[in-house]
Amino acid sequence: MNRRNFIMTGAIAALMPATLRAETFEVTHTEAEWRSILGPDAFAVMRQHKTEAAHSSPLDKNYAPGVYLCRGCELPLYSSAAKFDSGTGWPSFTRPLPDAVGTMPDDTWFTRRTEVHCRRCGGHLGHVFDDGPQPTGKRYCMNGIALVFKPA
Image 1 (cartoon, one colour):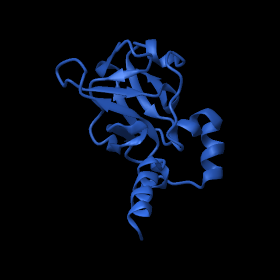
Image 2 (tube, one colour):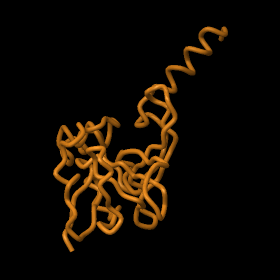
Image 3 (cartoon, one colour):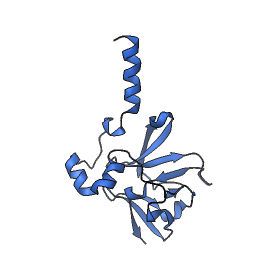
Image 4 (spheres, one colour):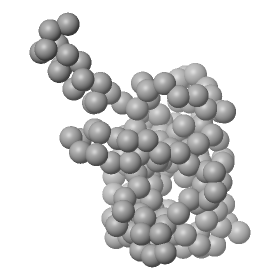
């Protein structure tokens, strides 16, 4: 492989959707099953790593007590006690519940971010940033369409 092809291969790999990265999860389905379970908008976010439009989710301004579950497998992900108004237009949390999410580097958009996914089904949830409030200093910025709210 010549130098130009090597560089192009690396650039293409960096832009590949995370769905092409090999990982094994407890809950798995075929693409057709995921499409049926999630519907087109949630499928685009959770399985194709798209982002919903800011301010489009009613969960952004939901502050009722309860738990936020993964839309793909119903794993409890976030407590309402960790939710805050980040002003970004997406539901934001200071921390996930224990053993609820996984993370991986996301080098798309020509920048380094940290993707957050459901640790059980691998569904893309959003990203985590280091500009959140105390006590964690983290902002788990989630796509509301990837979540289901269960009131307390």
